View 1 (cartoon, one colour):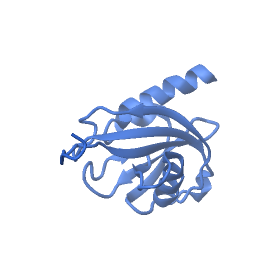
View 2: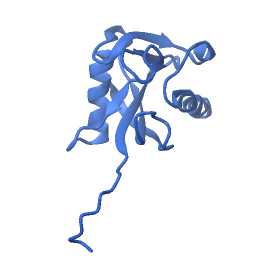
View 3: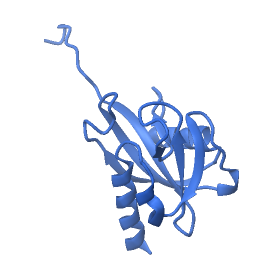
Length: 144
């Protein structure tokens, strides 16, 4: 059995980062590329081989927002097989703080914005980020 050539389909591993301040305002990027081109999303991306998910979160935050994040805290894991139309991805979501003054759209981001939860209904969000943001909001309200 061990010598047989068996092909396994393995989900891709990604990270998403909720970067926020003391007022619970947070950073979203506007996607430059498909899928969901033009939609707003949490900063994030694929984990590189040999990289921890925490390091991937720090790297992706810097690449897409120019923000050096601090206090990376695990929030949750999102693994619905259809959350990304390209393929099955599992995303590990982190909460982090960073200096919004450094925010600048870069890499896969067309634009960047600082948002509050009350304006989210007006925005087209990518992937399952509406669900993630709703759960983050509930979490922050409970911890205040």
